[in-house]
Image 1 (cartoon, helix red, strand yellow):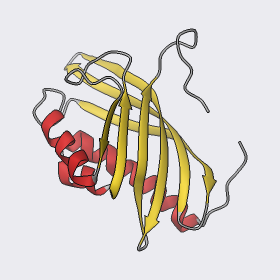
Image 2 (cartoon, helix red, strand yellow; image 1 turned 90 degrees about the horizontal axis):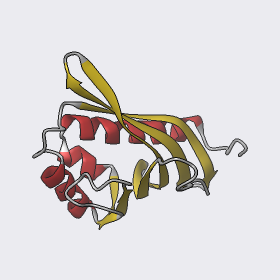
Image 3 (tube, helix red, strand yellow; image 1 turned 135 degrees about the horizontal axis):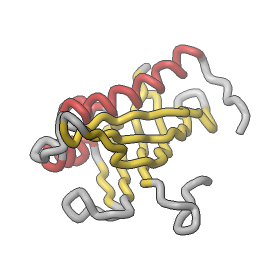
Image 4 (cartoon, one colour; image 1 turned 180 degrees about the horizontal axis):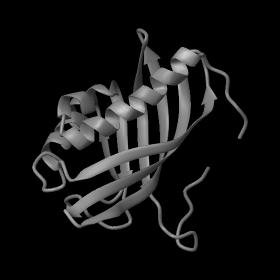
Amino acid sequence: MGLVKISVEDRLLVHELLARYAHAVDLGDADTYGETFAEDGTLRITFNNNELKGIDGGRWTGRKVIRDYMADTWIDTKLLYHQLHFNTNIVIVDAGADWCNVQSYSMIAENISDEQQIVRHLGLYKDICVKIDGQWYFKDRSYTEWVPADKKQFWF
């Protein structure tokens, strides 16, 4: 995987997009969460364990639908304010003038109690990001929870 050349400004704005998404989840900000997606954007979530209201390979399309998913699923759960989402090893794997494909690792840490913190999920995001009127959005954001290599592989 070689270095894909895009402007420093665009590279930083793409990184900022991933950070705004994570902050929106952690703070329960459904509006900002939705605004990270293009109007016709798609969110795909695949968990090995059905932890979010029976979701297994869930898919939501459209900014409002994605925003409402966040509001209905996360804001009403005990997980809000007890988890932190981390995106690491962010790599732009392909790009054009107004789009890029991004891969990043994800770790979700959870505060169980004052004495216990755990890593709740490890996974991989594969994103197609688009630049519309100078702003970067997710066109397609796909999360796959990591499971041992003998059961599933998530790389291209």
